[in-house]
Every structure is written in C-alpha cells, then in structure tokens.
Amino acid sequence: MTALHLHDTPEMLHPARTATRILVIEDDASVSAAIRAILARHQCDTVLASRAHAGIHAFQAFGFDVVMVDLFMPGMNGLDTIARIRSESAVPIIAMSGFRLRNSLDAGEDFLGMAILRGATISLRKPFSPPQLIAAIDRSRMAPSTRVSRQ
Amino acid sequence: MTQNGNRADQPQSMASNRQKMEDPEIGQPSPERTRAANEVGSAIAHQLNGPLTALRLYVGEIRQNIGRFRESAEGQDSMQQMVEGAFQETERICAMMRLIADTFEGPLYPENAAALGRDVITWWSRSAAANGRDTEQTVSFHAPLTPREREALGHISQGCSNKQGAIRMQIGPRTFESHRARIMRKFGAKNGADLVRIALGETSVTP
Image (cartoon, rainbow over all chains, first blue to last red; front, side):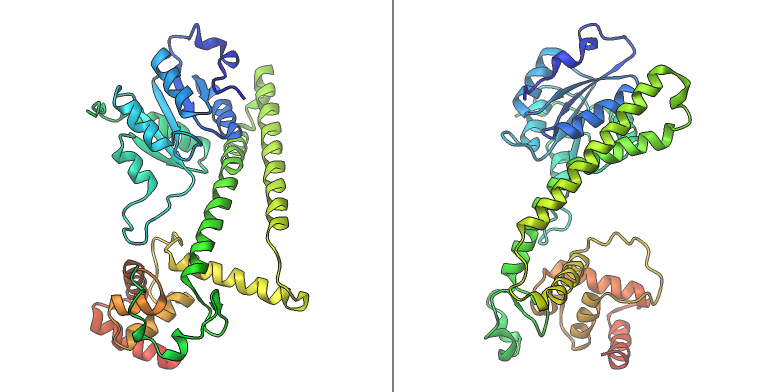
C-alpha cells in the first residue's frame, strides 16, 4: 500500500477556504478510512499516511491545521513522530492509542501521558465515537498555541 | 520487582513446590503467567482496537444521522458507505475472533476443558480488577468486595503493611494501596484503625 493516498484527495490541491485540513498518521487502514468518512461530513479535508516518515514528509510539504498520530506504528513510533513534528511546528497534535499500558510501579505514567510530554496537544483513547473525534479536533484547535520544542 | 527476595513472609508450603504457572488451590497467578497474560492481552487488545474504532465511528455516525440521510442523494451515498464500512469491520472482527479461537491450545483432557476455561476466565477478570481496570468511579458504601479486594482485606486484617500485602498478593504496592483505598471507600472507613476494625468483623463473617 502506498503510504500517502494523495489520489484519494483531489480537494487537497484546491482546498476550500473553510475546510479544516487534517493529517492522519495511522498504520491501520480501516481506522484512517473511518476517520476520513466521518470527517468528510464535517467540512474537513483529510490526508492519510500509513507510516511516520510519509506523514512527516506530507506535513512538511503541505502543512495542516491538525495532525492525528497513532502511537503504535511499525517503523518510527508515534511518540518519536510527535516529538519530531513538535520540534518544527506548533500545530495541534492529537495522540491516538488503544491502550494506556499502565506501569504498575508508577500508575501516573502511561503512553498517552508520555505523548503529552512529547508535545501532543491532547490524547484520544481508542475506540472513540464520532462526537469524541469532532470534540478532540475542536479542543486541539482551541488549545493555547503550543510552543515549538527545542531539541 | 518487589516480590523477589521477600518470600520468607509466606509459609514455606505455599512458596515452594509451586507449579511454574499457577497453584490451582490458591489461584494465585505467578509472575510468569502474569507476564504472559499481559503480553497476549496487549497483543489481542491492539489487534481488536483498529476495527472496533472504525466500527464505532461508522455506527455512531449512522445512529446520529439516520433521519437525515434520506434528504439528499449525497446523504444516501454516505449512508451506504457507512453501512458497508461497518459491515466490513464486523467481518474483520469475526475473522480475528476465529483466529484467536484457533490459535490457543486447549487443555489436555477434554472432560476438564469447560471447567478449566471457566477458571481462566475467572482468573482473568479477577486480575483485570486487581490491575485497576474497572472504571468504577463512585462506589456506594457497602458495595460488595471483589475477590481480590477480599483477599487484600484478609492481609490487612492480619496487620500487613502495603508492602507486605503487595508481596503476598504478588502485585505492586500501589495496586495494593488502591485495593485498600477502594475497600475503605466501600466501607466508609475513616482511617486505618477503623478499616482494621471493620475488616476483622468482615472476615469473620465471610471467610
């Protein structure tokens, strides 16, 4: 499968002014397809990347209003992806993960918490509902602008 | 971790001669079994989460907009796409469940299979509760204790500290502490002494 489904999103080349542009970096094609189907009904243009590197390239090339990142991807994982994007941009980032993988020695620490430390704006636990998805995007955009982290 | 080196706490008959995976009398998961269960559980959870996320999105959208889909041709196309997506994801989950069912080897003796299966399910739900995965936020007074909480209560009533109790139950001290906190909430105990008083009454009534 190609990493970047540009052919699926002709709108991307001539985006409507009002549409929110969202990059989804997620290795599970059925999840990203469902996210796109829902967002298409809410005036959002969605670009899908199934690997971190493709996603980062797309982000650098086109720029987006919001980036959604899955934490457990083959290749570069989501935490490193978030840190990488945050090192060069203040874009709202939503970290997605199915399970928290709590550490029994430190109950306060989990992967979604670590994602926030790496620079994610908010976290979204899978499986999420359409209202949760829309609310996450709205909240991430209203969050006070995140500072670009110095590496 | 914490359970190493402190087994002198336990009676020798319990600590030694134990099978690698579990002592069926006590139903206490060994660290090996807990680790294996965590790994398998995480892998299965990860696998199922993708299609479940997609399914939840499709079904949620259909439910919310069922009345409005008929208003336009676009709406109908969109509805058809959502229903098709939901169907595909359901099929994918079913295929995963078949794979899971075919992957794990059953017990050696068929006559024990149902009982052993039930035992594993009970153990799993108990250890899930012990790991604090029950999302119960508010607990009313005198709500029934879970088996693990009851076990923790037994240790507390014997005067165990959080650390000692954690070692006996082969769990982290924080987990034990959260058992203690939940028990206190359930019984409305004001402090440790109050809890021990209630614990002594409780364990004598229901051993």
